[in-house]
Length: 234
Image 1 (cartoon, rainbow, N blue to C red):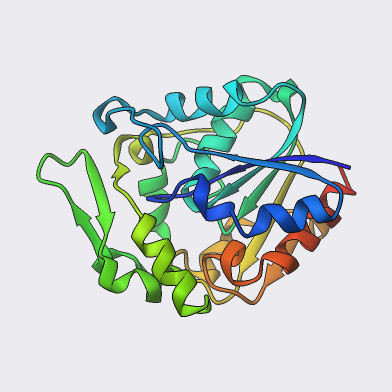
Image 2 (spheres, one colour; image 1 turned 120 degrees about the vertical axis):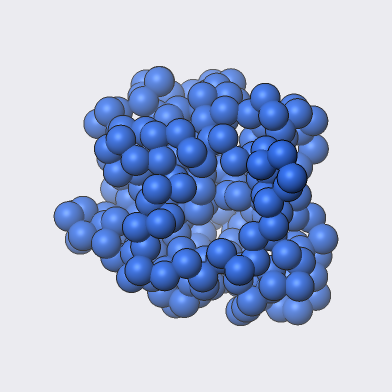
């Protein structure tokens, strides 16, 4: 079976994978999640966080090759990690994530999307070091198909997101197998833009899930099945 390393998206932490990991282990895999620098329990000052620091944190958590899963903004950190040490990774899985376009930053890619559904929920700090998501709007943006009590728990865990990593351009150079899971009811990254990002990908490497931006909370068993199928192709 496979070893999965799970990387969270903006404002989240390792906690967001808590519901998925038991389903993966029940299927015979090993699965772990980490807090990126300045997220969750990690106390790195937000002003010190870079895209490279994200990548180094991911690589420090890998001893033997893993299937690296990145949610949302984590498409950039997992790609950066793969560029630096492709021998540590057997495949990349982009879960309703930004799949970097050569020379583009995540912020530039966000602006390329046909709509900006998260924009009205973003609260930028006065120094423009971090942003937060308005708690009053987070359920609708991230968790509209998640059980209300679980969504409330997730919202209580959300933290600030360092801005600099999202303004850093990146070009994929790793040559590793890549898979994408598109979430067709996503209210954060428009589903149409997820289609655009994967337009030239092999069809067998793209999976659709009829969920919100957070299938690890709304459909963890189904997500585990999709990841298992992907693992079987690597």
